[in-house]
Length: 543
Ligand code: GLC
Image 1: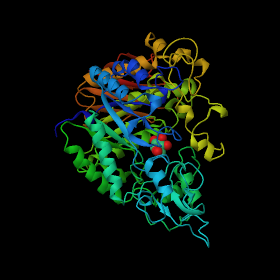
Image 2 (image 1 turned 180 degrees about the vertical axis):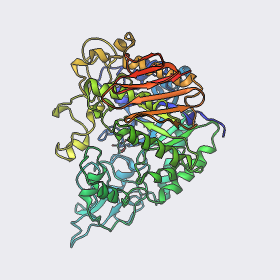
Image 3 (image 1 turned 45 degrees about the vertical axis):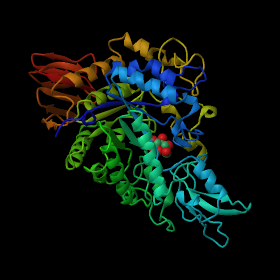
């Protein structure tokens, strides 16, 4: 198989609102991104994936799109996008954009037209409008819950001023789900795909890719609250057997109908010259369902979220790696590895925070970047940021509001990144930032870390440089496990690469004739073929 760039790429995720602000309105924008894009090429990434920057009322951080073929004014305009693209071309960075096909914003012209139209109309058939149950239709069509909390149905006022039908929204009530049984919906998305391809982009990340096809609507779920809880990553004391049972049978996710859509999109993409790709955001259970999305006539990659939740423990890590390589190997799709994104806690925070969390995150980063396939880096991960504390009055995530604050939501991971200087907003903007940057982030800024050889940033830069140049790294060829003491992950990759990771909280001594290529901690030594690996550390070795 000829190697293509998306077989083993490093993709850097930019959350546009929080990257760099050029006009001091407190929100990131394309001019800001263009001025700071060199950071990404200097890091050594191959591509940049942009979370949505399309026209949007911004009820869900831009994932509520009201025009997928227009740039939202908060980020500039299409010409600013083109300038950014030009800069990316100069820097040798490919551009990947988000596609949000499960829902539109309620401000999209289609939904506004649907509200003005009558039940049964063509306008309503683009969404999931249903009559309610109960004597006067006062009960929602089913008991499904929104993933963001509360009901997944909202009742509308009909044009005659009376309460009428209900529409489905798996997320916020401002995000009506699209009805993919209506061919107009696909026609519109194909138009959007072409629009961005014609602007020279190299790939699409498909939001909620497992959600487009819905099961029978008039059917209650036996435990809707349990299902919502089972899907949450922050609930860890859930009965594993019950969780599994709930997650393997979700009426609105992972239905067969989605595959037909992706086969069509693949044909469209293949009709273009070049080597563009699709990556699916699809949380599917059991994990072997993932391979179905990346069969040879469907999508190219699927996010493998195992590392977003994997325990810092050698056995769990090995199982996650083997499972991924086996399942995706069966359909010859390249694996992907993700430590963090805009929806999950930052990796340092997840691993306990503070200096221990940081040591583990550094060690896990080295481990992840030695694996075959693609790696996704979420902005700020290369700085070792933790989730920032966000005061109640600054919170914006609909999850926070829909759960009455019982779930804090995702604002902490979306705080802008620190660039330089001694005071917030640390060069993100002149004075403003939509979420405040913590005052104690001054040593974490890009400028500070660039001057410190022991910083996380310098480790990431070195790591990506070696990953690109070492023949045993990158690629899609397998890892070869080597027997190791309890709590230690050890593998080789041909030619001439070896990794050893110590996940325990005690120092470990390992025999090796090799020499050090890179380590996650400064205090690693090899003396007389004895490698002393401190607690929570990883090394890369070579002959
Ligand atoms: C995806 C996005 C998330 C968004 C949700 C609804 O999971 O990553 O940020 O809230 O879809 O669009």
